[in-house]
View 1 (tube, rainbow, N blue to C red):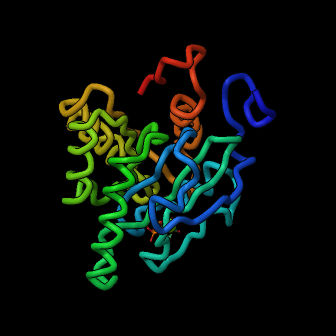
View 2: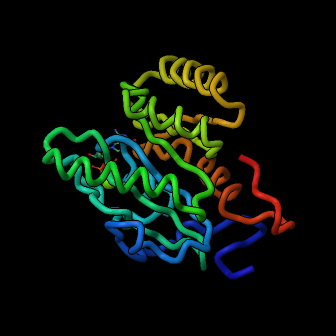
Length: 215
Ligand SMILES: Nc1nc2c(ncn2[C@@H]2O[C@H](COP(=O)(O)OP(=O)(O)OP(=O)(O)O)[C@@H](O)[C@H]2O)c(=O)[nH]1
Ligand SMILES: [Mg+2]
């Protein structure tokens, strides 16, 4: 194991920016392991990646939604990537641009062999938008492991936040037994260790090279 992985877990703070790809062809060779962060604009993808890696400016965060327009690759360890995908559902983006991104996202999800799982971020105050529902259903149908972060948990009371997790868990488990969900806050860093453990599952290969990690 490289120095980036100690005791089977990755050192996310060693993550470094690798490349921004605007098409599938520009992505690194499809022979690695990666996890993609997806969710509507402003859901908190870039903020979550910054908390995960304990680097304040690794993934650009912005108060202006729709800022991340490419597939942004971060290398955690050799051949181990985290991908910050374009925020979807931003109304002010011109329609043809929106369609182009959506097409690239579809292609990426369908074709990318390196993809071990998706982290879907949803603002806890308005989860399961139409696009979220579509994505969740698509993952269930195509057996792609999915982990949901209910972000900005700091915006709700403890009780209300816990109720949202329970409701989301019930909904996801009914769709697919391996879909998981957790609370997350970039502000308080709640849920950061739970997220790292999940990513380790997906990014650190098991002993048997033939065997895929547990979702
Ligand atoms: N209170 C609170 N604010 C958050 C949290 N996470 C993100 N934000 C804020 O929400 C806004 C959007 O966060 P980003 O991380 O840029 O969102 P994004 O999903 O990367 O957005 P796009 O790149 O446009 O797709 C920023 O103003 C963040 O500071 C959180 O956990 N709590
Ligand atoms: Mg972003």
